[in-house]
Image (cartoon, rainbow, N blue to C red; front, side, top):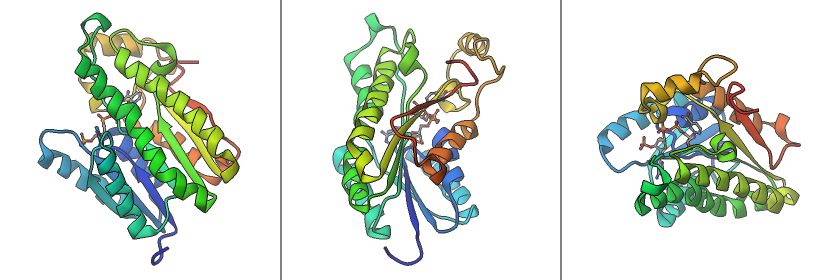
Amino acid sequence: MTDEVQRAIVVTGGSRGIGRAICKALAQPGCHVFFNYFTPGDRKEEEAEAAETERLITEAGARATGIWANIADKDQVSAFFDQVLEACGRIDVLVNNAGITRDNLLVRMKEDEWDDVLNVNLKGPFHCIQKVARVMMKQRYGRIINIASIVGVTGNPGQANYVASKAGVIGLTKTAAKEYASRGVTVNAVAPGFIETDMTAKLPEKVKTGMLALIPLGRAGKPEDVAAAVKFLASDDAAYLTGQVIHVSGGMYM
Ligand code: NAP
């Protein structure tokens, strides 16, 4: 390992929302937090968001590197992780957080709406896990945490693509947990409910009010609520947990 970095952490989709809160929660002196971000569109705006995440990580005493890379693209994922390995020589924590929605009723859903969501939300974590698994198994240590969703368990009208991707993430988590347990690598999922981010801000008011009424704890979640569960799963206190799904939903799913 090069210089004084003791823990290399990778968070996908760290420029905003839940990913940014996770980067901040995991940032500690001695860590190098890498994150990526990618949405085709206004790259300048995304870079400004990424710079803010880097600032928050650095403020917490860790090193920060944000990289524009698409997790749905195998070559870009490979190049991203190669940069991490070149800088740190190891990868201790992978948080598969990046995700998108393209909502539509099933009968109206276009093939590209299905493919876009599955490619980012399910194929992305597959690429990332494949890339880090060998490294973590060799280290005989690793923590993989996948961000799923409660709808991956409950289903949700208008989100067949998203729900299928998140149900897939839960299956991927359990299988990877079984494949890597003997090598000291744990794999768990965090399934958020209704969390205040850009992803939910675009929902119609009526839908948001309806969701709030379903939350026993009486409020929408904050990105920090999800980040706290991820921080626990990445810690030594969670050493005996693998293949689990922690629902962070204010009781919306129980
Ligand atoms: P968000 O605010 O929309 O942020 C999404 C992040 O993912 C951004 O950093 C975005 O980068 C990045 N991203 C999108 N596509 C990418 C790609 N192809 N490659 C790399 N990065 C990409 O979303 P969020 O609400 O924080 O959601 C984070 C995770 O939590 C997702 O997996 C989501 O499904 C899950 N989740 C969220 C909720 C909720 O209520 N918000 C509930 C359940 C589960 P740019 O900044 O470049 O766009």
